[in-house]
Length: 290
Image (cartoon, rainbow, N blue to C red; front, side, top):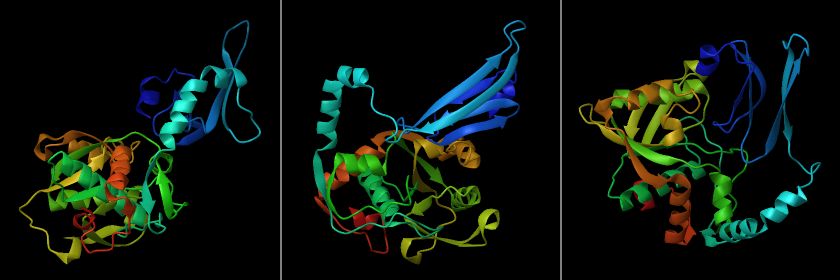
C-alpha cells in the first residue's frame, strides 16, 4: 500500500509476499494483484495501449486456479526430473505418529490443538538454543482442515506450515501483551497466545481483553517483563495487520532477538523427538510439552 502511494504513476503493482490471493484491487489508483503461493494460482495482467499515442487505455488482472484443467508442462517436468525425485524422497521421510486427530479451528482465547502443538514445538526448539520463553503467539494456515491421526511424514508438516518463518523473541510487559492481543482480535487474523489465559468480551473491532493471566490462572507480575515468541511474518506486521506489534518490536526496550529456528523445522523435530504425539491437555500448554 505504501508503494502505491509513493509511485502513483505505476500502472500495476504485482506483489508476491503475503501468501494471499488478491486477483485485482485498485489501491491509490494503482492496479494491485498477487497470485497466492506455491503456484496454486497463476496471475495474468493485460495492459492495452494505443499504438499511436502509447497511452494506457485499459488494465486488467486475474488469477487462475491451477486445477486439473491444466496439465503439467512436459519440458519443465523433464528438466526438473532429478530435483523433483529428490524433493519427493525428502517429503516422504517418516517423522512420527499423531495419536489422535488434532482440531485446527480456534476461537479468541481458545487455541486449537494444532496451535498448541506448534507452540510446544517452538518452545522446545528455543530451549535447545538455551532460550526460555513464557509464551508463543501463533496461528494455523488452514483452519478448515483438522490434522488427522496416523503416521506422519515431512510432507504433512509442509501442509501445516507451508511457508518459511524464523522465530523472534521479545520481552513485553503485561500491558504490552494486552495491547498486542487486542490488535490481533480487531484484525480478524486468527492468532492465540500460548502459555497464557486470555479472556475477552465483545466482538470484532469491539473485542477487548478483560483478563490476562498465566496458564492455570496465575496472576501476572505487573513489574515483570515476559518473553514472548513470534514468527517473523507476524513480527513484521503480517501484511500490515499488526502494525502496533511491528512498531513495538522495533523499540530497543523489548530486546527483540531473531533466533536461528524455523517453525517448520521445529515441528518436524518435535515429531522426531517424541515419536508418538498426543494432545497437550495439561493446564500449562507449554511446560507440559517438554
